[in-house]
Image (cartoon, rainbow, N blue to C red; front, side, top):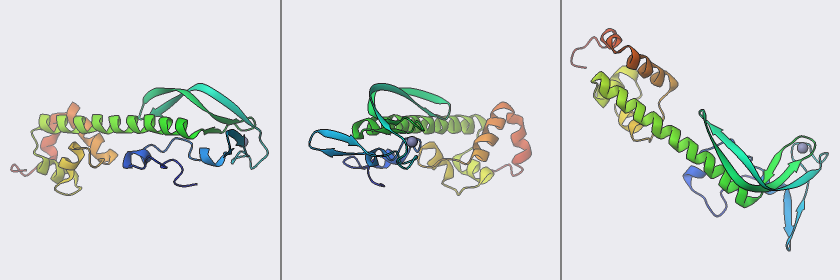
Length: 173
Ligand SMILES: [Zn+2]
C-alpha cells in the first residue's frame, strides 16, 4: 500500500510525519458511489469496521499538539484501528507535517540563538560538536537536524556559558 498517501500530492513534506495511519486506502473499495469497507488489517478480518464521520483527532509531535476536525473513515470495532478516508488522511498527515516543520524551525532558532550568545562562529561551533564544517549553517537553515547530543550540549552551555572555556582550549576557535 506504499504510495497511497502520496497519490496526487507527492511532495517531500508529505512523508515527514510518521504517526498517521498509512493503510486507509486498503480498508475499502469504491464501487460506483458506494463505499464498501473490507477488513481490518490489524485483526485480519475478525473485526467489524464501523463508519465514522466528522470527528476530531489530535496530532502530537515533540510536545506540541493540534486538532484536526471533520475527519471521516472507518474504525475497527475490535481493535480500534482507524483508517481514514483519502481526504481525511491527507489533512491529518498535513497537520502532522506542519508540527514537524514548526519543531524544526524552533530548534533551528534555538541553536542559532545559543551559538551567537556563546560568541561562536558556525565553523567554531561545528569544530566543537562535529558533523562537518557546514553542519551549523545546515542546522540553522533547517536543512539538517542536529543530534540530540548537540542540542543537549548547547542547552547546557546556554545555562552555563562559562563552561565553554573548558571545551575551547584553542583561543582562535
Ligand atoms: Zn481491528
